Length: 428
Image 1: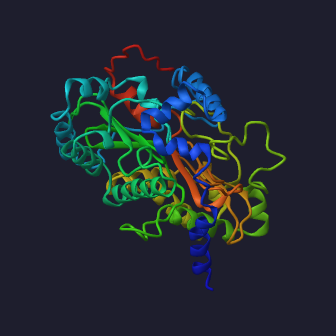
Image 2: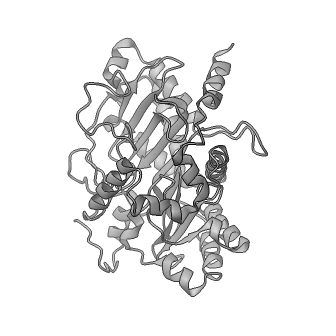
Image 3: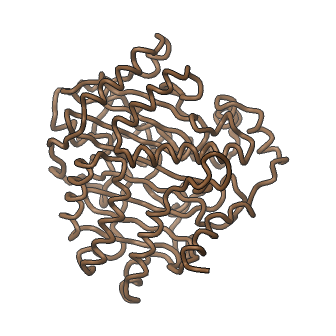
């Protein structure tokens, strides 16, 4: 069996971990819709570990936005207003097509102020913890099509294809565990921030299980950050979308980079030898995020630099870092992606690549690429719906943050000026 075939086998081995659907957990989710499922958590505090995490998230949400930093201090003047060639006219037209179909009740939940704190209330579990906007599986087909057209207009073609694949894999998981009303291809919410405009700042959030995108737009410039993309399993092996697969390139390139390092370099990059290491300080691993640090509600996380400095790597290895970041910037239209990759490469002297876990072909792992202008995380997870107790290569979480107040376009909004802070506290 070739190395590629071995890796394919690792990804399709999820079927040996299919859960017992006769347990109370799966019987309950099979009879619930999204709102009933959320009620189990929010009113009945089940499961307790996730409810506790949710309570912690809401405390973090009350903090004024500062942004992810490496030491608690926001570095100024990292981001500039510029022409990125984004087709803003087409995106505005797509957004207006959505708005034209909203009922008054839908509009009240969907059309929020550009500086609304609800930019930050996204989360990636299947529980509908923040019920704002319109949910695609609860609206008429024409409105749903318009919502997806907005997403397609804003993202690159390959980025939109990746998002659709994530939604289809979510549907596949819903079928596997008999929870189609909670997890399906359209179990995602869309909310707009600000009035769609070709000359003023606005944006939208699109979020649900394993796919959360925050999109900020100003003239021909775009920020897609923060975003979260995951999959359990990360490949569909039967049905009309069999062969659909995501996050394998991020996995392959990260492993290729780690395996290209010398033993000494690997020692510098590897922060912990085991995925749940005894040397980890309290809180470095948690039940939901496991190893990744900058997921939902972690807008102000302090993440010290770890690992090996990218500028000390060979040209070929630095090219692998660029290719990794190219995957993480895939949602962006091509010109914007090219410019942001240039921003990242210009900071390789301040960029660190860090690793947790083994680096053999079969080993699960975590890695992070971090600089003043980007933070990208990759993590193999243990089962949430599937029954694998240890991290496996078929359950993957990835995310991207723009540190130093770059998330949600905040750093750019501060330059634009004229924002009306309606009850929202920005920390200067």
